[in-house]
Length: 218
Length: 245
Image 1 (spheres, rainbow over the protein chains, first blue to last red):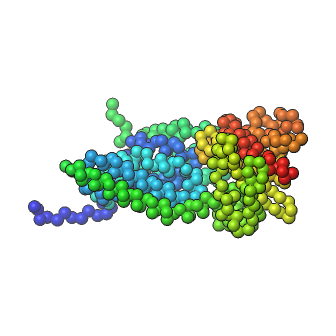
Image 2 (image 1 turned 120 degrees about the horizontal axis):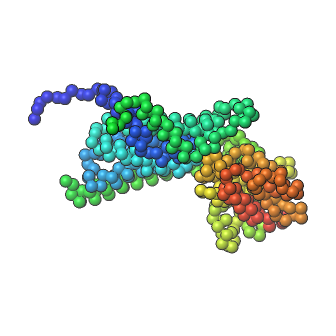
């Protein structure tokens, strides 16, 4: 056994910072890994539910990552997926109950989508790929970073869809009445899920065009 | 490698811990959730009666101040119970499960229905809770009518999962305001209902216009759901209307 003591890694070392910044851009769960698309289409018709969904996913993913990381040495590999699913499902139910008790109107808007966080494959993916093999602190950063990476795309899509689909932002009228008087019409297509897919596609396009790292070699 | 016994033990302990955490959270949060649901219902009833912006904090007080009576009627229009005063917000009239009762109706079994009454210096307004099916899930609402049991003074609708921008628009004021002053009863006092129609109300004969409102484009199945809901629920109150009038 070697007597040398490994120097403690600072909390926000370059490596740890990368855990948060990578998922925001070059390793984004939605635009690069193309995970969690289903919920990104469903909740982004307006900005407000997108924001609450982001907060809920941040809470669930960060906590799930930490919990699984704490349990990682005891989990029998053969039932690890079941264990992960149980942890995620319990956290989601907790979030749902808390929303119902404290912010009832938001909970009404999100309705079934909170329950669908369970099926968000980003969460399961991070548990499987990261939390099972890493200590709690890096896992926390990783979970938070990925949830944030998911969240900003949600906000961007929600912003675009609400502005062009309803002419409002956060339910406040943005496009002035005078425009409508001149014959401007809200784009009803923006409110439907297919348009969310197209908006996500445009985001991926812009991101790839600006970031040479993401362009596959022929 | 982990033994089978370990795996079983692990799974068993995990399940027990999770069950304990979730059930205690649910028990702890339940009173607040029920209160929120009750307040939501009160706000919706008040909104149908024209009080749109009642805040969550004031809802219970305003509700108790305005709703003077809560009545439970049976399928023949007999008044089974009439609550007033403090006991009414915990009464059967407020907590009656509309879904079960309407199911009983569809099965031709006896049923009971609630009715909320606002008595403003003798001028009574009756508020009827509605429940039906839209395209993707339930739609519901409240309808306030005058004491002639025909003139609609206001409605509110809400829905669980109608298509955004199309069917989901039934909970906007633009749609709901159309119902104001429409008539549920025809000239000879028989039940006609108020219908959501395609193609513009103004294209209908003048004597039918008071029974029609404009539908939302692209929301046909939701509109049909709203029609069925109004017809099915209000129809059940007609025996009561006849007895009163």
